[in-house]
Length: 89
Image 1 (spheres, helix red, strand yellow):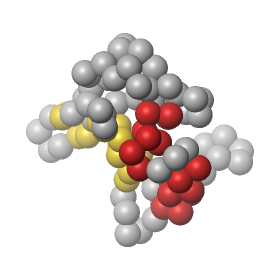
Image 2: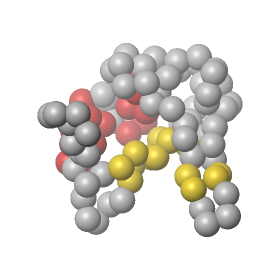
Image 3: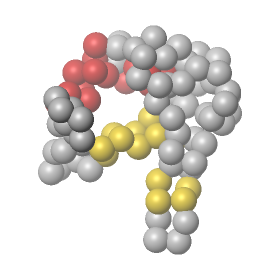
Image 4: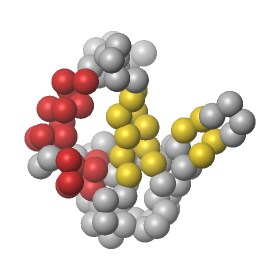
């Protein structure tokens, strides 16, 4: 891991979500713009945060699911294993 980087704790994800306007609009502000990866295409995504979240889906024992619909991101918290984004609109 690069120097100075870390896996965020839950409170850092909450701070980011709140800073970007709350649960309903924060996802739009960190998701990649355009329709290259997200399905269906969401024209509300702005990526104004510069985060460029991509929908990597989730791995199950058998396969990958939600590959173009959901992005899951790790938290170092012991009570929450990940944060996820989905298309709100």
